[in-house]
Length: 421
Ligand SMILES: Cc1ncc(COP(=O)(O)O)c(C=O)c1O
Image (cartoon, rainbow, N blue to C red):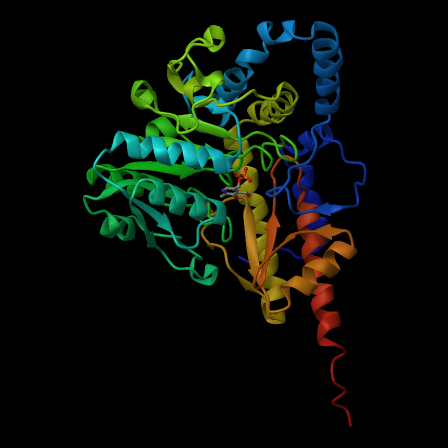
């Protein structure tokens, strides 16, 4: 089926979008800006500045140190529970908002290796987000082991599956303690076969850590239903928690009593103010806390999570599928003949909420688009990542953004040669 390529069709899609009103719940000072990078930094929820001002003035300003006992201490778990139940299918007490994804990857991998003594190999994807690869290498080194790299390096070959369950299974010898993979590939948006990979990993006696950074808030997750062991993710993308917002770590209840924190700190202690000589971990996922959490930053995460919870992940996912499908249709209609290729899965069921396009001049094109008020994301060497955060992106944004790209490609190609003479 060919999609109508006129702007009126995009306007009609916006008019019938059940989530359209959510855009009004965000600060959007320039409505003409076509923001296609909500998968790097999500927009600012309108409620956030006021809620932060309240925490700063009424809690920090007025309550001072008393505010720790009046709620701040439990915020990482309370916001974690709200995030976990809305986005991860988590049970109460399984999700903690803290640190960064990098630090949580370090903690999750060490904890998984502690649960599998005698095994010192980590399986990870060669083309995984860099921080995960660096942490995997370092944790393996600290444990006297190594990383078994799987999957292709080139994002161009990851259109459908970053890695299959069969490829993971082939790497799972009895030395493997843990597999670290992303649910949604940061380059292609391909969704991993989480069920098949989790099953294959468990069949081999290993554990799995899922990085959900590009999945949380774009794809409904059910980590307990999946049988996952540990998971990590950020909250500055689809969760709209703000620049440098604290990340989250999830651990299945079944592992709680045996989990060790590789960066044990006083905030993860069973009795924070005991100030005793020995470290004794708090029950549950709280033991993954290390240092003092930011009440201000946690408040911002809470505001973003609240909007996703209100919208509901099935509706968020449905809009993500509709937006990316529309982007793929317009790419086929306009851009392929102008030298652009699609580097994301064609099957919407296999795709997160962004679409990656490839063009040899991607870097210059993204710069030119940005200069024209269209903001996608450039990924080396030739990727144009079009992020379509469902709560804030309009179908007319997809239309206007890709129409601008089409116009730039035409300008780049120059005028049609005059064949009349
Ligand atoms: C898949 C993935 N993992 C990890 C990170 C890095 O997270 P952080 O900077 O919070 O450590 C990102 C950042 O975009 C990411 O996309």
